[in-house]
Image 1 (cartoon, helix red, strand yellow):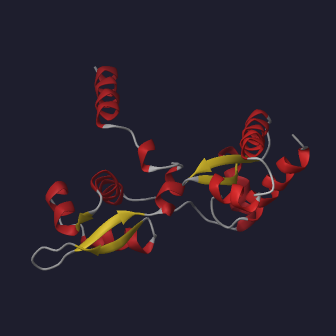
Image 2 (spheres, helix red, strand yellow):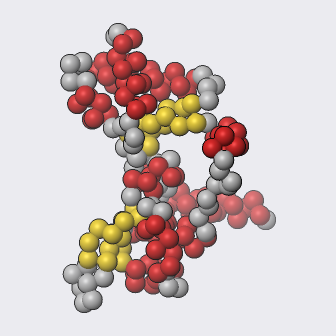
Image 3 (cartoon, one colour):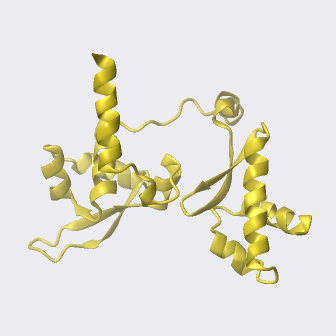
Length: 182
C-alpha cells in the first residue's frame, strides 16, 4: 500500500466539516482498491491511537473525525475563551434517553414515561440540535414525532444507535452500583 493513500485519507478527514463515512471516502478515492482504503483507515486509527498526540482519530456518527484529546480541554478552552462546557440538565438527559431508546416518539409519550411535562426540555434539546422533528403521527391531534440527530451521536461519542447500552447492560451496571453501595 502506498503511504499516499493514508495521507490522502488523513487530509480528507481533516477538511471534512462532519464525520467522514467510509462510503464517502471510497467514493472520493474510487481510483484505489477498496481493501487498500480499508487497510489505510485501520492503519490511521492504530497510528493515532498508539501515539500520545494532542489529536485523536475518532469514529463517531457513522464516520471518522479528528478531535482533541479530552485531557487538553482546559488549555483549548483558555485559547478559545470558552468559560465552561455546556452541560445537559438531569431532565434533558432523561428526556434524551427516552427519545434515544423509544424513537420515533411524541411529546405525550415522553411525558407518560417521565411522569412530567417535558415541553420545555424538548424545546431545549431541539435548540441544541440533539433531537429533531421527523414528522407527525397519524393519530388524533397529529402530534409531532421526535428522533435523535447526528449531533446526538457526536455529543455522546457514538457511532450509531446500536452503540447505546442494552437494557441488560444497564440493569447489570445498576446492580453492580447497588452492590458497591452496600
